[in-house]
Image 1 (cartoon, rainbow, N blue to C red):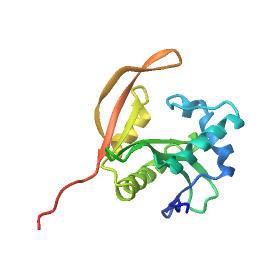
Image 2: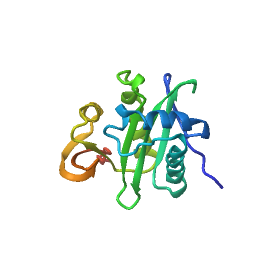
Image 3: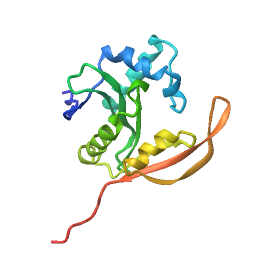
Image 4: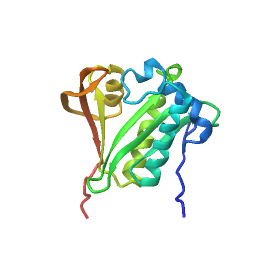
Length: 183
């Protein structure tokens, strides 16, 4: 039996499972030069973007994460995506990722969506740690991480090659509040 995919709704946002009709919006985001400048995935064609849709479905199927389409509460406007991947049940941690179509930058969407995602990860996936690896040059994303109470833990210098050049990654993390309350 297939487990129910959660939806998370606020007055303004709906976080829901990706559907086939989202392909064009995912392509719009992951082919936009402003989005992919610091993002690890990009696509040149609609057809190639189907790979990303399979990635989203496989996370759920293999129990290795979950990604949500971020939309307006009435589900009429697609804003972007956010999710958790590289989920380790053994270590109770996952990696966060997110992106928005540029027309929606600066509207507080991620400030509202990411805490919902984190609550879902800590509460429903039994995570203890959610970590983010941000390209050191990506000032906007680093600002978002700090605003959302992710702690900067350090920088992995020249740890990956992108477009023929070494890049450094800043590590941010949020750890579940594990305080044990006295009896």
